[in-house]
Image 1 (cartoon, rainbow, N blue to C red):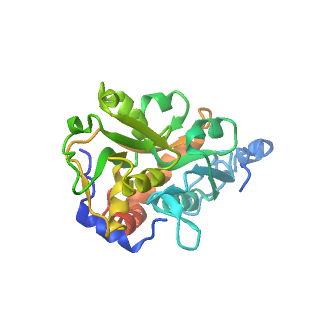
Image 2 (spheres, rainbow, N blue to C red; image 1 turned 90 degrees about the horizontal axis):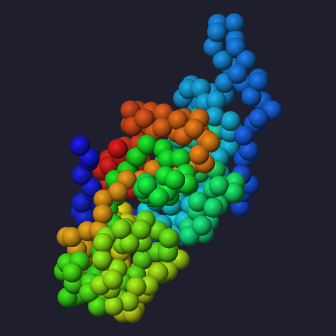
Length: 288
């Protein structure tokens, strides 16, 4: 059974937060023979994680591609430093595996291209698992639930998806929100105008300025945004677009890396560190 998504009350806990180059590490191919040399006791001399686990994954550093405007998963704080749930979770996974973790903001429109061209090693930033993306990347196990929801201003006459007919609706370009809109049969055709922006933040500012009627976006982002903008009254429709799960994306050939990440996520779940990070950002433990 899936965990329930965090409530609006829990989201208020997040209000204390503020919404606001590296080079990709290559597999240590020359060291493979040394890493796999057997010791006298029959074990292999693999690289050791911080928790004592072995991590023969071919990397001593991974470069993570993210959208640095996607609060609360990965974004910049008031000091322009990267922070967020996924940032802290990735750092914790790096500690378990004993590898260095670096972050690289990328154009989220071309995230799979950035990954498969070798510009980054992982996509980790509220990255929704779906069949289209599975054709291009190798996913980790799911670690968080999410939904694609509709946000309107409190005084809007929009109460259901049917009420979006003739309205101006926005979302982020090439996002899971956009994919959900197109997957919902006939939905987009009812919109009076459909507009996409490079970031969700631009969508939300457009709505605040009165130029659009509704924003379709990830629930984690929307609830965080509402909690951090108490001066504007919003409403989330009860009817939503789709359910989904977040995962970490790697290149198809990086099976060892994904297996190691899956193991590290399990360890963080078991030792309570995952719950600690989740509670900090969401007010409760919502990790899968």
